[in-house]
Length: 351
Image (cartoon, rainbow, N blue to C red):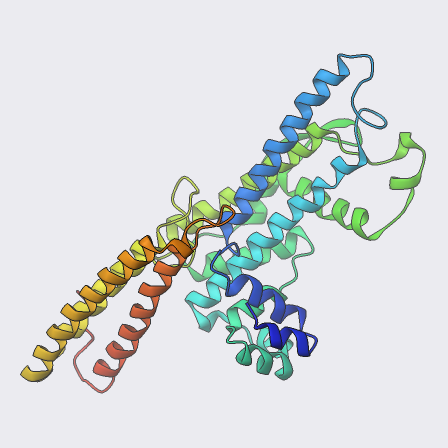
């Protein structure tokens, strides 16, 4: 996170603050898994509420403030849209981290020189800033980002077409109807916008004309949101390279970033060892490798044994610290590998 003195002495651009909070924290939540987990957790919560409603409706009192619900239930729309926003913004940052050439000139220009200067002072990356700056205010904006991501990794697109062909049944203003998943998500964004930014008859009119969600309505739209996220993530899992950031497994669980980094380190070490270097350089490299491997083993043991990294109020930073240790090793090896092969005629060998 940004240093306390920096935060205290001047007003920080919201994009800088966002990128610093979620880009530099040991607890990485700016990713697709967090969006999916959050949406699924919301569904689980509202399903409990729906069971409570069924039990209360069987009693004399019934459930809700009016018409069998509470207005607060409608605000699940805000939370579900946030999941979609988070999903798109984090994946855009992942794409630009993986392939900086995907950055568009207008994205860099929109940041402005002042913001870029502050970002460099705070040691933030451009992908983090672009992700923080991207607007996802409609289902079309959401899908546009993912068409871009899928196209970049060679995956088939057509997300809008697929969502328009998928039919779902849901309640809208108390009337059950069947409509495309795309339409339901489009209405979700519109409903969220009115709920957050407007005070009309839909919220202060007669109770009979208010647009109130029942717990079951929230559950159904939550399932549409999760299905959409899972559909997209399945394509990313299937087509993205193994080292694509925050890639999920086939069941939607987080990938093993530590194993991925260790595999990269092993490959880089082999590439460097295959370089046509002088005998004394080869001997020095072997000695350096042995010393580094021993040091990494001791560092890892220290991290796992360190009490100050153990869970504190349910938080455990040992895994993220260990990951950072090996990422630093990988960064160094990339630089070394590039320098070795920069001026050579023969191609950089693959392990």
